Length: 232
Image (cartoon, rainbow, N blue to C red):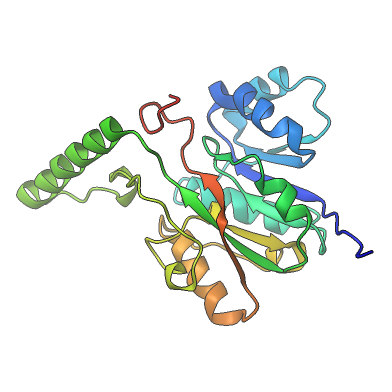
């Protein structure tokens, strides 16, 4: 009989949405993973206070410098300062994302060093309308008033991003979609830009030939964002 692999899985989150802590705890609890939250100093006491009897939750205090992208600075801090286990799996998950129920069990069976998942980004037609309206308003302001509007203010589409070599590029992938063995994860360093996820994907695609694509497994992007999903 073929032996089954059982991989320890670490989820890494740049955490700021304190109001979603309990929701995320209940979503992640059944998966038997280690959840690493990188929190800034202004919310750490709030998180410590509500994190009771969860020994699988690791709270890391780090406040990014003002001139750095908050999420990617936190990920870099974790990679540089925490003990990364080479044969364990590491998943980046934003603090309003979710995972479909079969994802973790499937990862536990894997042996691949890099795995790319798909990402659903919503299904609410009202959300699509509101995002389109916001996008048009932002472009109008930018064009007519010559204002430098940060990229992160532009709304994300609700289309699905599928795991594919063709999507390993800026604008076609999120950091949640790439899962790494620790031996790879500990070598990463994200750039100081909102496009750091796509830049990392391009770098991974260029430098690693053995990448496994699983278009059948899904991360749920901004799952707890009001209006994006039918459940919210």
